[in-house]
Image (cartoon, rainbow, N blue to C red; front, side):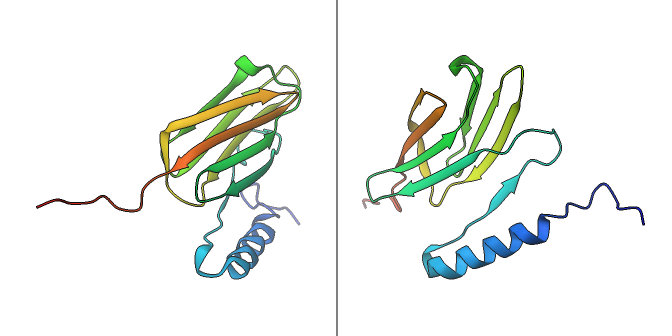
Length: 128
């Protein structure tokens, strides 16, 4: 039996993880795992930590020079692209809350990438 190349055997697995994480986090949770399945990139291990003061993303990006890491954020999705002669990493991570992308600060040390953001204010005061 020939499997269609567009079928990813892990799609159902990741949908179930998303469902369980949403269930555990209750009304606060909206977990979404974006997986780049088209470029043959290696998977990153990524942790997201949220406090009232900041959103912190920590990713293991071993074997990559600092200058070969490209980060982009639109306020709700952080995109990490990195490559070395041995491997490529492509990750799109939906952040748990909107962030002020202009507040971003990043460090990279011994293969560990850390990016911090200030959360975006929920609403603006409107004066009459």
